[in-house]
Image 1 (cartoon, one colour):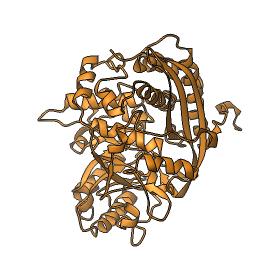
Image 2 (cartoon, rainbow, N blue to C red):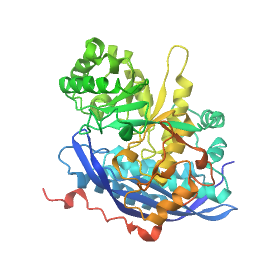
Image 3 (cartoon, rainbow, N blue to C red):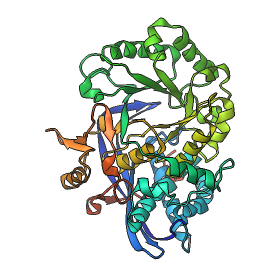
Image 4 (spheres, rainbow, N blue to C red):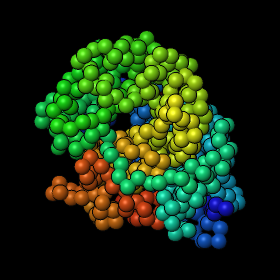
Length: 465
């Protein structure tokens, strides 16, 4: 039986993160954004109290891309999601398993956020971040690691949030998981990133020896085709083989525009270096169109959803429309990732393959990258987007003592080669051995005294028209 817990406190903090270079995806360019930190205190039945932590960037204009909202408004949506979730979680009395606490709050969270005009994907951010910190505390209280704890379904994940799975399905999947000792990085090429020459996509100093590349798309088939041809030419100079994925971040307006891109991939010889190595295309169309549009013949290529993953049954709904994959992001919910990985394993047969991918939303060095990396390693994500190490200078504004503490506790993940402590990438891979420690993939917590309290969010009505 999974241990039962009761929440005692939830506190939110943030720290500014300055980017070392602009990151453009979709219709926005990010130069800086705050990083969220969550601290929870729980009491575990028969085990006493424990403190847990989690972290994630507060990313603008990804969870909610409505054009009438400013980047600041979409960040405030996430802060509001956190505050609503805090109230709901703390209102739950009595002891229960970690997943039971999540399941008892998530529907009310979606409804309460809808009343504030916050869409489901942003609404899920609050519970997702609290759940990570609760799991960290739970694992510390019982003295076990994320990998060992999840093998025994320590969180008590059952089938109540899924129409097609039972608790036995999920527990059996977790029991069979063999955590990966290494996860290859997937190097993101943003829309403003340099392509050619020194500092370009084939420069090992920029791509850290990656064998996988994620190429952002603009939504314009002609412009994207020209850019992909140039990238393919550059990647041809690597001296080793590589694979790519394409990510449109909802920028392709409809199936007609998407068909034009795929037609170029199928027929244009200048795109053959990309087309021959293309693993999948990620979230090409806006989420509302995605939910209503079958891919038809385009489904011969693998497509995945990301921003359209707004509920526990999203993957289930997308399967008949031709989608074969879905992204795992701890900011969307670690439990949902595990449910979807169980589905992918169950659905995969000799005739069809379904899969979960690792897309990291600029996870930063420390808690965020470690917890997301551990989640992917658990469910079998062999390569994952790790663009945080590329767009932010190491630990950024993290106090040096805190960065050194993480590096000392996780020496296989971080190193200082004379330019400050940074993610340590070994022949294009990240090692996961040090993540197998008591707690959720971390031996240390942030310096709470060096963080500022989470900024009080404005409601959407408080912004000037």
